[in-house]
Length: 330
View (cartoon, rainbow, N blue to C red):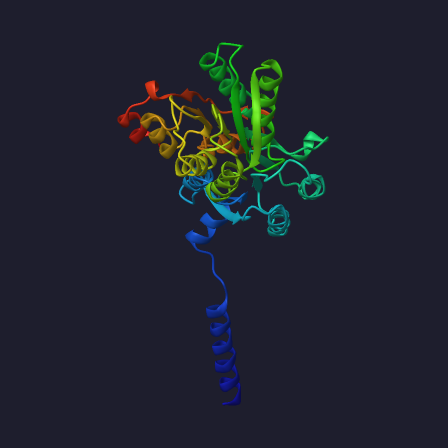
């Protein structure tokens, strides 16, 4: 009898142990097959940035074979560095980084390299002497964008005897977009002696800060300033600048201050069609498919292009219709 009780007890324990054990399922197998992407975004400081994040989230889904770990750095580089180190600990397959500025990345990128995790840079670049620290860069040619804006200005102000007053409102200092667009304007200023830089303000790529610094600058003028061009390094800067200008009694458009913007989101193109923005230089945020091409190339054992630039164009009111704007994805 005692042996029968012991046998029954052993069978019960065995069954309980089996019930508690983790068993494989089709869902678990599918999870293991997913390519894990650790992505660190700058933040959500602009309409462009939000569209860029949405492009990534649309591409890197479980239905497409990916698991996306998304980190919003809230415009702080230290948060991005912490996110990369967390991705390394999590042993992700790829790290996708939108660097807030170009400097200060070599140590953490070296850590990712030693862990065998490829890093793909999106939108902005990093200042690293060793280019093997990242696998590829996907984004825009910001210097070319600025050069297109300068070329448009030359067409609008062809008379070298006419003084052209310019306010430059730049984005986050040290970011690739700021460096490229600023460099293009500085080169044009050196080329045209009649182009006068009235002020250089820090808009940090946000509407709120631009409105604040632009209002402060305009209020400090002894009278109405002769402002011919406001060179805004993204759409949200342009929105803040236009708000400040109009509140101070300035006209934005052909008969007043010509506002130049970069990004060409739907909101900016609407204001361009209305005439308040004179020129919108496109900076395409829909980079998810291009990043996926890089990953698929590496998954197949290939080597991706080191730099992949997206195609872009410029818009004036004459180029736009309501239907064209409505059809845009961002």
